[in-house]
Image (cartoon, rainbow, N blue to C red; front, side):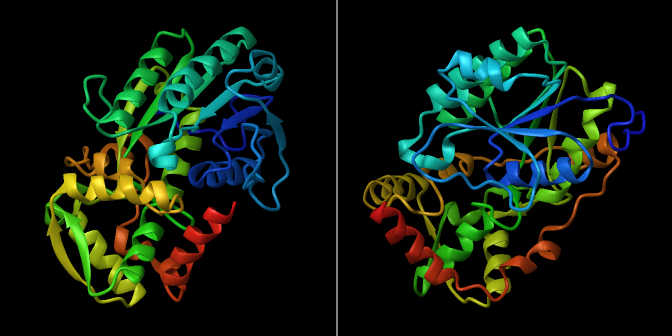
Length: 327
């Protein structure tokens, strides 16, 4: 594999557009792109809430709904590269997977083709499959198909669970283990195997692939350097947050049903119903893909959890719930 270019030396990219740039992964990617010298524009959808834009970063912002073709075309001005990270699964039972993950992807693709965009990157999930019984995994697979048929030079990264400061994974677990007294419920006893991927490693892969022509037209499945059961992950989070709870096995259908009800009354829950779909089966891939393709040795899970230390996770849990209800 060729060495990636530094600061856009191989390709004179005029502008990089990032969808989902206000999310956990998007903010990290935008920050690294700008720090690497790239011109970046973040696409945000109209909302009554203030967007969580990266702080202290010089970038352009374009406001456009996925159903607004004219605004999308305007957002594509001078754009050579798109990182498509936008998705709606974080909203749980309120998510519009058809409108955002599927139709939204098609709208972005149509505008990108019209604008002559050179490269298109998409983040998907391990387990994405059109025949999946789980809505998010099915939606991601359908979006992937649209990308492959678009005629654009694409790179799709199917990622394992991504973690880091500001995520919805480990910080959600930290809030729950502090808020739930005495015991902690785990679907099937936490036997599901995961392969957590450090946010900085994912962003490095995304930027590394930008100027590597060998990644064009490819779909990669990437994860961290180890397989961990959900139980092991929860115990690591408990250890880091100095919390003691007894893990108890609960049937996944019961947990999912309870979460659906709770999301209706408490929309600020840190983990959505779609997490239980993700945990319904092992979400792992080859351990050597990141080192082999991206020349990077990913970080081990337990060595990167220091951001969970010393935080009032219990108070954050209740503040997120009651703060959201007041909006």
